[in-house]
Image 1 (tube, helix red, strand yellow):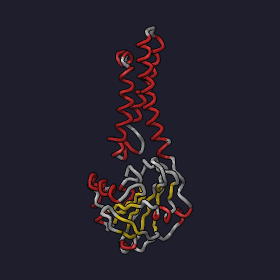
Image 2 (image 1 turned 30 degrees about the vertical axis):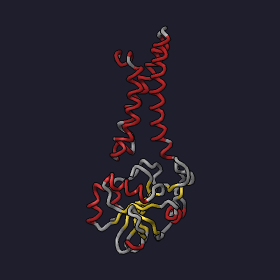
Image 3 (image 1 turned 90 degrees about the horizontal axis):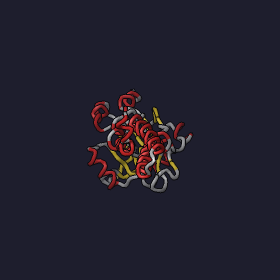
Image 4 (image 1 turned 90 degrees about the vertical axis):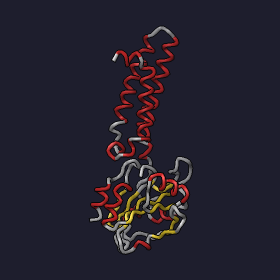
Length: 103
Length: 140
């Protein structure tokens, strides 16, 4: 995602990535190690995961709940214009396909 | 092949180890080798084939030390190959379906969460422009 960030910027698209398994400190380390400068948000209480219906009970191998993966394409008015829920957390769409869904 | 077969007791587990570890350290970085393990699956399958060759050696030889060596090496190779296949095809697919709510929702619910600097970010603050919202766990 990071390597093709300019393609998102050219289209005025903000990338917001939410993790239920990381604290802000862990996200900061992750961001600096991988040169990430889009928004990484910590959802340790799973409030956002619940709001979007993505809680995965007992899903954290180290114990507790996390969020199942999901992507939402949101327009400028806050409407969800598309969504994708992978069946395997290793598998996700490429940047090209992701951008196409905003067209 | 006869060299590989005779040395299966160390080549097979080495292939299994390389095939397992390199998925996470290297090949998960690129979509082409991450979504389906095009590189790692052949490597661990080679480990499985050599592992069986090693079991054949263990069966045939009369010397107990050689028997144990080949048997141990083969078990390690088969275990590592099995572990990779389990992770890739089963474990990483173990999660609930997206809820009906998630599938049907029209308006993106607002949220207010801390970012990496500890500053609170709301979805509403991005109004006026498109947003790609990702819920992720590893591999993103």
